[in-house]
Length: 50
Ligand SMILES: [Zn+2]
Image (cartoon, rainbow, N blue to C red; front, side, top):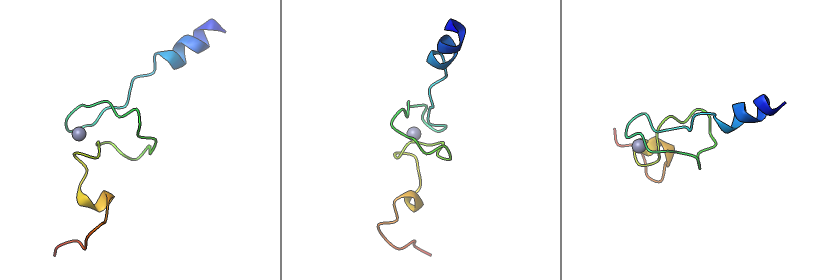
């Protein structure tokens, strides 16, 4: 039973694929980049320039 707990404790932290920063606040499993490296499409506050 203890081994199961150790397994979850040693799970690798999710890091940004671009800058390598730890993203433990990111819960979206499809996000591989931190908000600093994510394109504007992640926060569509303005129309995408064509
Ligand atoms: Zn990043």
